[in-house]
Image 1: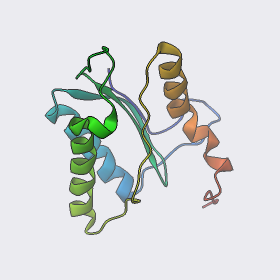
Image 2 (image 1 turned 60 degrees about the vertical axis):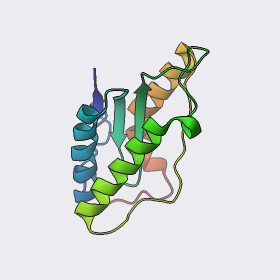
Image 3 (image 1 turned 90 degrees about the horizontal axis):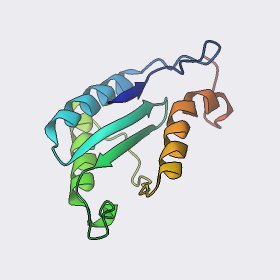
Length: 133
């Protein structure tokens, strides 16, 4: 089940309205989810200045856990394709050079990352780049 967040779901929480960049990113996140058989997007949130995506990697290593990202060409290919599609539509590169990734190895870690994604819009007002429109 894909869980996407464009608001908080909290009555008094801030509504995250997507910019044109955000709308384009949202379009390609949803399209790419249909193109890959070995990964799926479990959850994501598009914020005004960043995106969080929780990918489920179906490919397993010898220990039964997902292959580390540096060795997992599927994740790297997904990120590269996503950025390339967005950049083509934007007409320029808006992505930072590096991204942060983390391999989730247990239920508690999974729940903490899901909670972080769901609650991220609530923390936006405290971000150093936040400004009232």
